[in-house]
Amino acid sequence: MNTDDITNPAKEAGRTLADGASQAWENTKVKAGEVADRSGQLVREHPTTTVLSVCGLGFLLGLAVGWSVSRTEAEQRCVCAYKFFKRWGHKLSFD
Image (cartoon, rainbow, N blue to C red):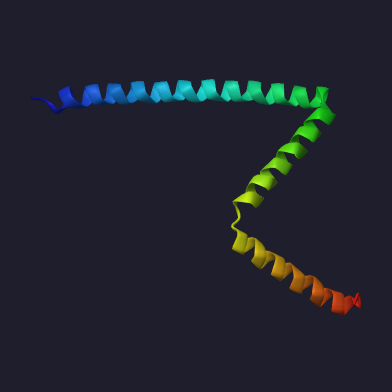
C-alpha cells in the first residue's frame, strides 16, 4: 500500500474542510456587516429611543448585579463608604 493512497484523501478532506470554513467565515462577515449597517440606520432614525433603551438596559443590568451581591458584601461596602465619607468630611470640615 502506497502512502499517497492514504495522504491524498486526507489532503482532499482537509481542503474541503478549509473551503467550508472559509465560506462560512465570508458569510458571517457579510451578515455582520448587514447587521451593523441596519443598527447604524436605526440609531440615526431613532436617537432618543436608542439612548433611552441603552440607559434602561444599563439600569436593569445594574439592578441584576446589585441583587446578586450577598447581604454581607453589601454591608461591608456600606461600612467602607461610611468610613470614606466620614474621613473626607473631617478633612473638608463638613462635621
